[in-house]
Length: 285
Length: 302
Image 1: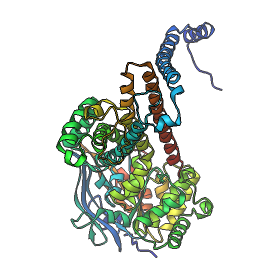
Image 2: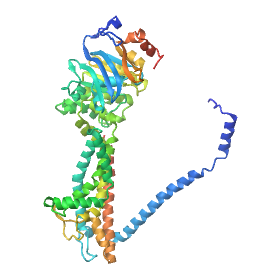
Image 3: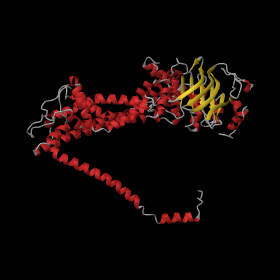
Image 4: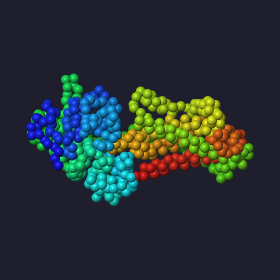
């Protein structure tokens, strides 16, 4: 299964200019000229990119480049912050995500999210996973709910470690287990996409490795977009990488821009932009 | 072990200080001042409690709790006052708890941060500082006079509503604080799963905030049942020789009963006044214990 057809020409791909990217057959997200403001502060400028299905796409870049903000525009998590505004379009399959008729709650049901710090609910392991299916009334009985919980935990490679402590507090799990629990919780509502905002940055190297292995398995089923500070991680897990950076304009306004988007191997070995080269080789950021 | 490169001057200064540590008089003085503060507060409290206990405990008996007041201090009891206080407790819980928590949830989880909501927040803080007698006057004008046809005038309902107004701001403030203490990461997690605002509030935020809310509510209830002035203002009776049986009956409460007895000339009445205060104190202490127990129970539930 390979839905991604990366153009060999690199720059000659989907769109001209510095935001040109790989050629993609089945795009889950099509983002065009996306700009984003927190009040009067423009956090993103004119982002254009397509994100393919069942692939891991990594967003890298220095702090403050807007990659997390960008990630959160994909499931309308930013809507919860007062005073934000946005221009351009974000299409999810054929749906305009910011269209008038779109219910952001439904969007987040289909497009799940895993956060930087593991944030399990202060409830049992079972209740953490069962919460989503409960609110969406996905199970018609206790047996069905049990099945969903078990399947989700298995998929998140956590079942073998927690099957005998389902009724214990999730907060008693280790950090890595908590993060996999958060992934299981996201899987349980049957999403199409999982957005991950630096999912391993609070974890030790071994827990990080397990999360990365898990992501590799999950991309068979889900589209994964991951923000990471860790370039090795992006290189290890992703097929596509987008490099964001901070542009400082004449009036010293700082804003996030997409510099280069391409096949991960190309970004790390033969980037077409000087700024990408500087970043991935450690000369900047 | 690496050596710290200190200049000879620094090294000799450090040596001198270790050999002859300074007296740190200010440190000791501050500690003494703090301890004196605690001691003064405790001495007064303990003295008061001992005095009340010495005078009041001999008069305590089961019949003191159930008897009607009487002109004979030997036969008098706090029955109607205790029942009145329990009525107040139930009434205030029923009215102020849901209203206060709902207000806090609206302010903290739903309302946008506009000039209006900021004004409302500030004024709720101000309301918490309004003297209780003012609430008594409001209760007299509104619940007793204006709504007299519904409340029955100087009734239990009028008293409970007045006390509810009195403690409402405190409940709101305590609940807002408890909601604010719930980390945003928990809200994010819930929204991230496609939960609505109501589902997030009802299933994640409120349960997490509940221990804090309970503590605030029970402490406000303790304040409500100790209040005397607003109830005297709305015309609670001082001598009640019947048990109030319906919310529209007139009533009295423990602090008013105690106040009534202490104003009598005979010393025997002063003693049973102390007994009434002991009853009130035991009630308050048990409520605070319940607050602590509830808090523990809910914190351990998962």
